[in-house]
Image (cartoon, rainbow, N blue to C red):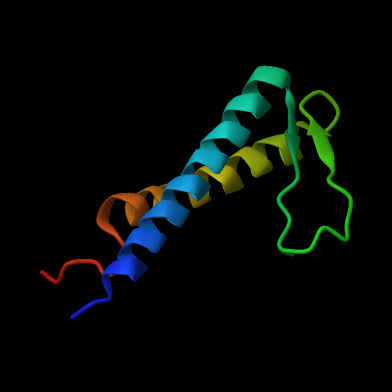
Length: 86
């Protein structure tokens, strides 16, 4: 039997991360600037803002990264951590 609080926590974290990804995509498309994706959890590196006019390829790569991470987060938010077996 799966632990119920783990499912709740996974769904909350998945929903928060999905919302954050959508918010970054929406703000990036609206403002023409997006923060660069960072792999570290510590904020030791400065946040880089990528402008659509200055670096268009890097801008769309960052939009693609955020869109790529949105779908697994949404899947976890809807179905939970332990996916049903078929």
